[in-house]
Length: 516
Ligand SMILES: Cc1cc2nc3c(=O)[nH]c(=O)nc-3n(C[C@H](O)[C@H](O)[C@H](O)COP(=O)(O)OP(=O)(O)OC[C@H]3O[C@@H](n4cnc5c(N)ncnc54)[C@H](O)[C@@H]3O)c2cc1C
Ligand SMILES: *[C@@H]1O[C@H](CO)[C@@H](O)[C@H](O)[C@H]1NC(C)=O
Ligand SMILES: *[C@@H]1O[C@H](CO)[C@@H](O)[C@H](O)[C@H]1NC(C)=O
Ligand SMILES: *[C@@H]1O[C@H](CO)[C@@H](O)[C@H](O)[C@H]1NC(C)=O
Image (tube, rainbow, N blue to C red; front, side, top):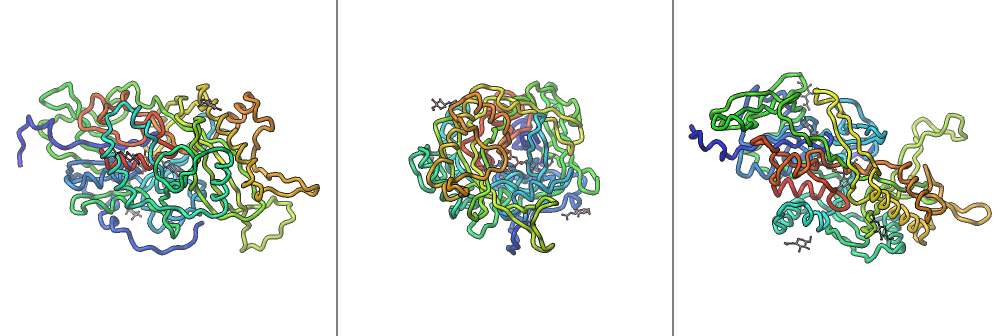
């Protein structure tokens, strides 16, 4: 049916681009998730097809967004990676480190990249995005996140959207010896009160939600596609979006509007996914390199530094990712993990290892993430090939408040290490004293010395993978997440945040996908 052209700008056809901020487990058998019936290999798509909405990136925000839009519109979701179902490393907590270490340049589910300051990082390249490779901890944003964002959030709708996510994929974790000791240690160190199990951001110590269920199986944003209207949605995997097709509209030649995208399948074939109601559009420019100059793209990029200590405990520990969190007023959040990792003894060691029996050691970790951060970095393209990592710089601790937050947080870790709850993990020396067997740097002995603590923060910085920004609200996108100056193009994901929401971002990213 022909639509009169003056309806063009009101036509419900936004192109939603989800441009992410930077852009050995046990066997299991699980039934196929129902969303798989509308997931297709990109090779099976026609060379041109029309939709009401096109969502680029089947990630943490992209999946709930596409599922929600499919209730009323014809939606295409384009994901460059494959599906996690059937891959035990992705589907279990035990596979977490393997996924992050077994990486290749173009195909692995984790896309590794190293910031210019030398900090290794990763992001998801799989349906579900980074929520399909992450540590699974789930906690809602701090109330300040909504108050200070400059946007008029409808908090009732925010809560309904969180509920929608939680009903489907959030579980209460079972604490075993390490996470229980961590909870007690946080409380002894004064991170009070104890709030039990809660998904809310509450001052003190709490058990948060997990996207790993009671059987240990991961659920990710991809599972939110089970909510989709199967008649209205198609999901293409191994579909790498290379360009956004822009056009100037005939009613206003100055206004540039997105009319579709070009994606490439694994055979190297190109496909066009176009928005309905082309109206009187005039193809103008095809994507990068110079489509539209927005000076703040890639600026205001942030990564929350992670600092802490790791040690080999004197008693065996379960494998655990994050389950307990300490929310302090010190500008830092405390978290912990215990990883059972394969261990290769040095060549000349005294270990005699039968070929079939690998050695494992447990490593217990206490870490802190600073609030914010305030230090800003930047992202630049290294190539117009979308598969090539961009150049990323986070400028960790370039803002003095970030240093103070880290000093506060790492001092609190010192308090936790001195708590009674941690004693059982220390080794007894021959003369009766107890000490930790640290792996990597220990905290400075004199933790009251600010300069030494600040030096520890800088020296031991790593990432908690909560990087955000690059397309922040107010600079690149407006309050409705529309890209400034371009019609029908929106960015809905972590790249729009200028602070990290709460202790861990995935809850709020999934909420946002539903909310929008
Ligand atoms: C190792 C790790 C552990 C973490 N642990 C936790 C945790 O325990 N709790 C927590 O809350 N958060 C955690 N996070 C952070 C959280 O997972 C991320 O902040 C969040 O998932 C980011 O969501 P997003 O929607 O912005 O991007 P993503 O989920 O990364 O989605 C981006 C999607 O876009 C796709 N894509 C990119 N470019 C293209 C293209 N050109 N064409 C097609 N598709 C494309 C990607 O493949 C990906 O699927 C962790 C992150 C990592 C990496
Ligand atoms: C998608 O199609 C390509 C080309 O036929 C093939 O090589 C690839 O294995 C397919 N991938 C999946 C996940 O089916
Ligand atoms: C939203 O939920 C939070 C708890 O998560 C609650 O404190 C708040 O009052 C709720 N807000 C609204 C408007 O329902
Ligand atoms: C660090 O902790 C002190 C209390 O010990 C607090 O007064 C100060 O505000 C904290 N610093 C930051 C940057 O939050």
